[in-house]
Picture: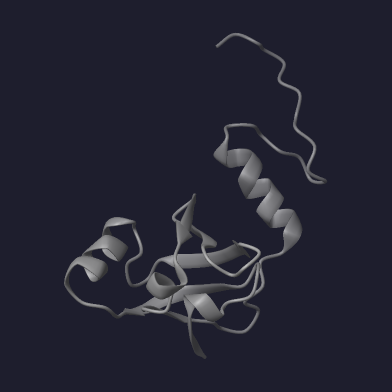
Length: 112
């Protein structure tokens, strides 16, 4: 099923299938790392719905709804991101190993 990014629900993910827009807008979207085949995860929307926060290629990105409507994603079965996996990725992104349950591991050697 195809949706535009502005129609995704929180923690729903999709694979970029098509980029719309023209000229500078399209170039701006591509420069942010949103290219066909990239996985996009909707994180949250501002209280009034604009901007949207998404995760692309391991980093958080804010988009206007007007930009997000030009990005079409393919949402397959099981498009939800499990909460525990999201916590695990978040811990690794900052260089902290994370055990199951979300607690940081204790390092034996404190040398950097």
